[in-house]
Length: 127
Image 1 (cartoon, rainbow, N blue to C red):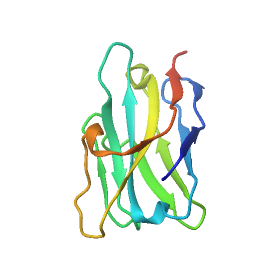
Image 2 (image 1 turned 90 degrees about the vertical axis):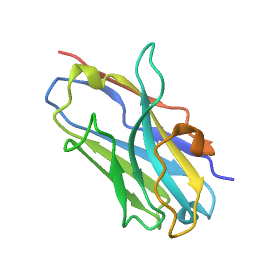
Image 3 (image 1 turned 90 degrees about the horizontal axis):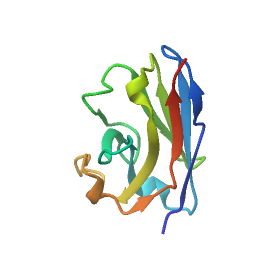
Image 4 (image 1 turned 180 degrees about the vertical axis):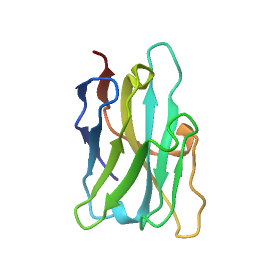
C-alpha cells in the first residue's frame, strides 16, 4: 500500500516555472513505477510523465515534451516534476500515481494502469 500526497501547485505566470513534489508513504515506493497525470476542466485525465522504479527510465507526454523533467529520490520517498515555460493550457489539476512494477516492465501511460493516486494539486497559469 502506498499513499501519495502532492504539493507545490499554485498560480504561475505564463512563461514561468513550477516544481511539484509527490511524497509517498510506506517502505516500498522504490518497487513502484510512478507518473504524473493532469486533468484540465471538462477533459479526461492526461498522461504527463512517468519514471521507472530506479529513476533510470523516463517517458513524457507529447503535449509537454521538452518543457519538463520528472525525477525521484527513493531514499526520501519522493518524486518531483519540474515544469518550465508554462502556458495557460497547462492549467490543470496535477496528480501523481504509482504502480507496483518489475524492473524490466515498460512504463505505462494509461491512467488505468496505476493503482495508487494522490489527491491532486492545482496549477493555474495566468497573468
